[in-house]
Image (cartoon, rainbow, N blue to C red; front, side, top):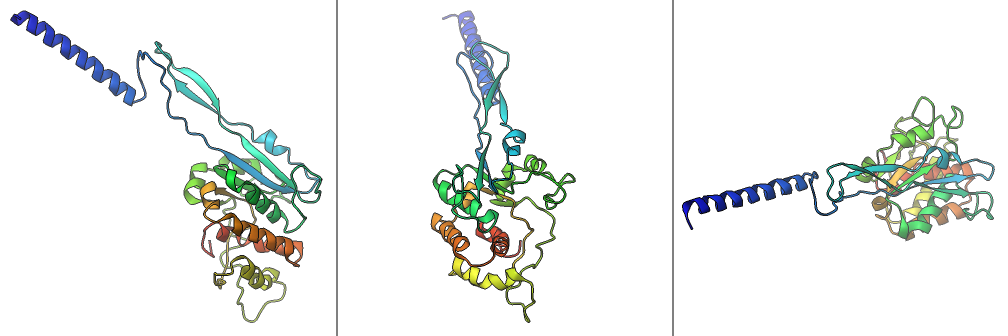
Length: 283
């Protein structure tokens, strides 16, 4: 082979090598050009559910109406084209699980009307423990209103705004996220079970000894318990499953069997959710 032929062959090989390198760098960056096959990016999906406890007379249609399905527009490039193609792939919407607490004939219902929202929350976890979505958001039945939703942390006291502001990646990282950031009522040391002398009218403190012994039989009762009110929070699937289903069945049994008034048992649970889902006694 003469010098000219060797030069031509070397140049050709270098050109092929350069072309191969450029194509693979573009592919690594997600910009594959002139591909001979269809390429799709990694799709990350997130499943989620809103769980509500409601009276039969309460309207929760705002959940499906005002929290519509999210659609992710993923940009792909198909075979033999350099033009990005919008590829709408719907991510799962917020599933709506509204448990009616005062009508056992309803499609979704609790076994009794006790503990306010607590029995609905626990019923959902027990029934769906093996098929939980990535994020579960526990909400009250009301959407907004300064009187009913005073505890929602935005100017409109609007749960829809609160849900839209929720960062699912933070829920996945933290495990449990209270939707209320304001410290009062509830913080810093709202419940002091060993207060001496006892103070009349603090029903939750008086009830906490019996409730704690029933729900956490192997754990000493903390001297102080505190967390922002008011039983609206998001929890990751991983955090829920950090406890066995039997724990949630025990909590539900306590709510069903306690002789405490509904208001008191519901408020006891209000000050225990953060502990149930892995946080310290004072959050």
